[in-house]
Length: 369
Ligand code: NAD
Ligand code: TYD
Image (cartoon, rainbow, N blue to C red; front, side):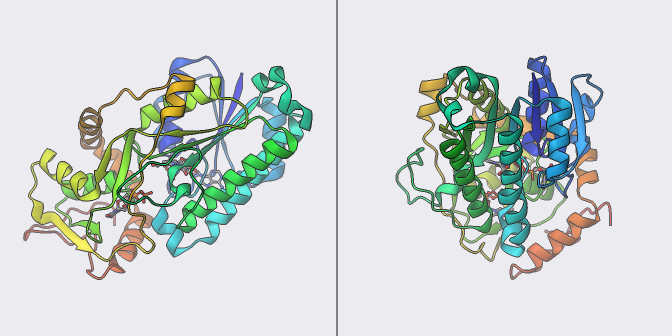
């Protein structure tokens, strides 16, 4: 079977491609435009696999999509490609509409045309087993929770950031292609992922990197916001379960039942790296900052038999070790563009925290200037 994976050079996509090539004999076509977070070094170990094929391109490019679908006879699409960072969506929302909404629409429509979808196919079990469009979405489409309760698949969509609004919009298009055209779709909505190859704009790799280099650890607001953390490899097994067994048109929530306040995560990282808590620096809060995410994943557990395999303690231990061992990967990622991003993003947060500024009278380590 030929599977189109979009955004496969990013954090979760690259972990998923590695997982698929290790466990199956499918042909994987990775379509990725290589934005700032897309990095072929995430796939260096499997780039030579005869079942792997990389195409550099934009999911919004219809003529490229037609060629890819035709040439590779694509049967399954797993759409990871996205602009994925909330803070960037607050700075510059437009690209989030272009990629996350219009790009998904272009993919959906190419799949509909190429698979010769007819509305009646919605009811044809045989057809559903042949092709599938899997949209990788996020729990952030549900908005924010108070101290009680969980997001279920029935929770209303109430996104608060331009990022989550663009993902919710894509989800609605995916739903519409099922309802109107009978395109066999699934949507997965996962909580925050952590693990190897995550771009260090996100909380965990950013804090590990800063802790190692004597930099300030910038906590937004009071640091008491709660996220539900899942190891990326457990996200991969969940997507696999949905790809194989998901019922057409259904949404599946995926979560780790690991609710942690941001400040707890940062303290855990400092402790693991034998660093003092004086590296913690409270900075201006994110606009529209969601207070708490927590996923009820009983549907995927009950209906598809999925469950996570990592405990948070084991997952974080392995993750911190991975970043310690792979400092060359990190140095490569934090190139000139990252330094510009970092100094602008954190410069705007009240206390200027340039990458070159250390804490405790120590020099911060900066490599690539
Ligand atoms: P990422 O930013 O690390 O990777 C995104 C990838 O998409 C990059 O390789 C990038 O080059 C590519 N891309 C961006 N625009 C593209 C375009 N127009 N055409 C082709 N490729 C394009 O993101 P990630 O953390 O790996 O997230 C992957 C998906 O999972 C996203 O859809 C995200 O919304 C979703 N998700 C992420 C998390 C998380 O915690 N990271 C949680 C739930 C869901
Ligand atoms: P992030 O990794 O950006 O994921 P998301 O916003 O999609 O949940 O952020 C996770 C949490 O950490 C979020 O509440 C914002 C907070 N945060 C900080 O406090 N400081 C930081 O430097 C970053 C990047 C995030």
